[in-house]
Length: 445
Image (cartoon, rainbow, N blue to C red; front, side):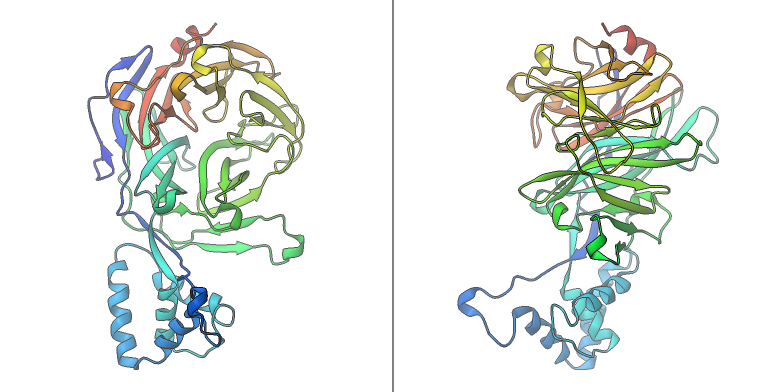
């Protein structure tokens, strides 16, 4: 098993019920940083200089420096990024072009002056310094070179940094029922992103595209907030490999955009985890957290699990991934461990017996536990069976953390008849558990 600073092992081999906990943990790593735009605070009202804002004064100070001083300070500024990020200079120049004539007065600057001005309007952000949790897992698009019985996967995680701002970060690994779970050591670098918007804002539906052209390691890519609706976080990505009726496939994901006051569900699509398209979602079926797409259409329509009442699991069907209309109730709280509310822990998994949905329930003292249910394959609004007791609860050594008494997941997968469930502990870090599907189904009533 690969070791790295953000992966630790411990005495997690004990079982709770039928679930086998694996001795693998993913912890926050403050050394993983992204370079993101920064606006120095503008003038306090009492100190306002009418003719020049603070932002303008910063740029003017750079432009007034001797060329040799600019070169020396720029070299000092860029030195720490040699092994931490790709194409820092490209980012800084792009930032200068973005603010020149908009945030600051239009000016002519040498390349080094432009780089240094761009640096004053950027910051390093440690996007998983505080927490690394709420994982989702899907098969990797590239399975070449894998030994028999092994599956390469992509793991998405919610990283939390300064200001409790959430981003989406990635890891890769492999799983074999006989030989176990391996998590690949993450890269020490982060890819520079290119943000693309609709060139016609009046016709835009709010969609954006994030392009990561450099680097081959998926762990080098991070999706951090880039729109006003996301400014305080991109939370809880639920990924699924979606297969169309013509057998073509892509990855879909729902996540929660948070602006500091309101939440809004949004849609992610990608073919290769290099280019990510982010879209708004609308309609009465898309008004709360916890949306999860099925891995294929049913009777020509896209199916979606939702929870617009913040209490039960509902099913919506649509011809349009961006708009979701009325829905029907699938699962409501029945047992004490889910009396407050119940929701999904990721996209349904198709089995011969039906659609397996891993669920979470919230009980007394706001304890989160993980269970499961089975839906009819042809009519997923029809509940076939459910677990009367949780599959996982927080054990004694899992209760403490940023949010106590929480175990939670945003997506699992089945490989060779075994469920691989990544899950978060106390909104702080991530671990894994497994259970044979036949044993899981046998616990349902």
